[in-house]
Figure 1 (tube, one colour):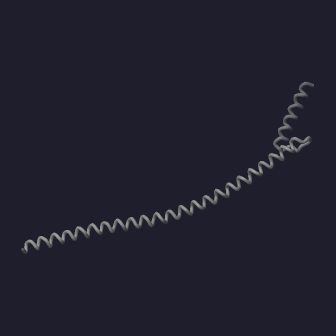
Figure 2: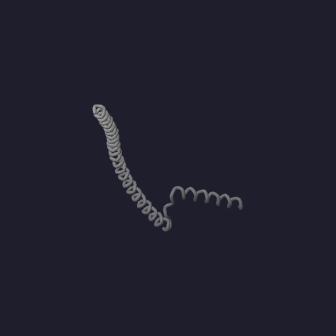
Figure 3: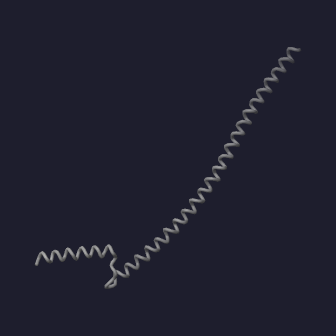
Length: 113
């Protein structure tokens, strides 16, 4: 019977060691999972802050674009009104182009005379 109880106690001891090893492995996996979750939560907070920052920047840029489009529309309508009037003001680029055309016409006229 001593042999039987000795075998039984060694079996219980090995079973206990196996359970302890399994629990340690499980505990280690749970610890790593908790660390990964904490890291992901922190990363999520940083990304959410960046998203809010970018959304704010986009809103500012959209407002700036709308203001510039309104200014362009206003200037286009003013240009259309002034160019339709006789004796309208000519812009610098148009003035230079007109001056070149006049010089070319004068040169052609002088060549004919």
